[in-house]
Length: 110
Image 1 (cartoon, one colour):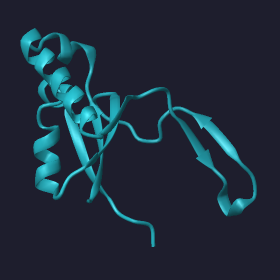
Image 2: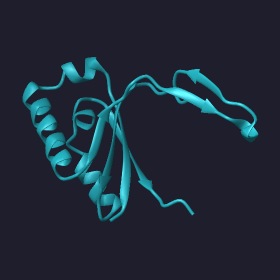
Image 3: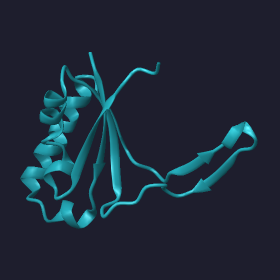
Image 4: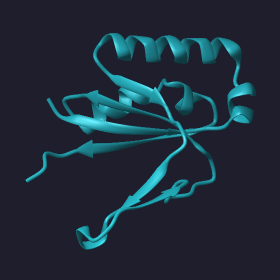
């Protein structure tokens, strides 16, 4: 079955202005996704890793990308299609609490 990487963006202010019942249902939805095999997690502090031409490792603290909202978490989900993956994440906390969720198809490495 195809796999999808999801990236949730959201902040505390958006979360807190969302109705608590909607938030509770979003967390319950996350729990159901995990029970069905999704791998999910809250984002920690990132580092950038470089080893250009395999000539020496450089590690820099912080994100390479930037966005209007902070990265809140990641998931890897199985879904038969992109449309189904979108449906599956449309009720997670970042999607309903004034954030956004990106859905990336994960393709096999050649």
